[in-house]
Image (cartoon, rainbow, N blue to C red; front, side, top):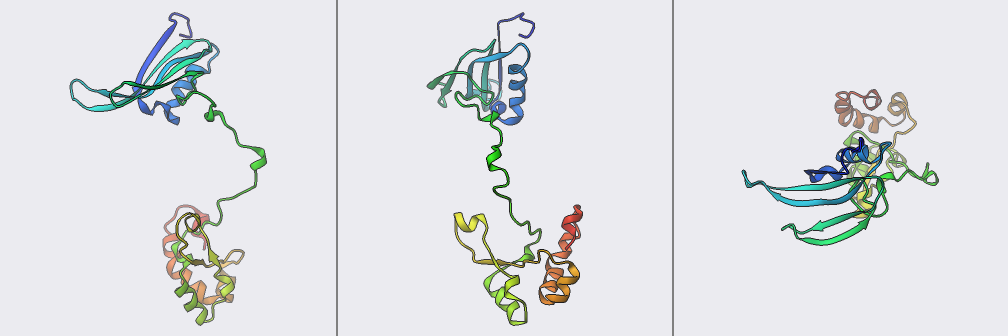
Length: 202
């Protein structure tokens, strides 16, 4: 089509064409110097192989030269039309706002972070473990409440965490020996098997 030998061309592919990896094919065709557009598309169409009788789902696309509106068709499990949309068809086989071209908002920069990465289940404590450590001299302030996303969205597990942030291994051993020994016993063995040096360091 770039050489203008044909006016239109079509593809029948797996329905993964609309996923990020498959979209590369569409982006390459639609963003060249001689732009093409999708004149017709069905993102998810049933197909049965005549030889193997295997049921698969395919995507059907038709390219046209230039920038033009296209027909996006939605079909049922028998291939019969359910709904249609007319407009500029995006590379993720949708009509409307092209979310694949969305960029990060500068206003959202530095507004949130993934939080602490424990790299070791031994950092997490339940209520009984926290009380037991406190009974043998551990500082309760070193074991604050741990709130993860699942505690908010589902059920609060009432967990705590050993917070050794800012302390070197030597300082932790000297000032909080009970917690230090617990981490040596429960975290250090698994960390020593990790490739990343920052994760291996206690």
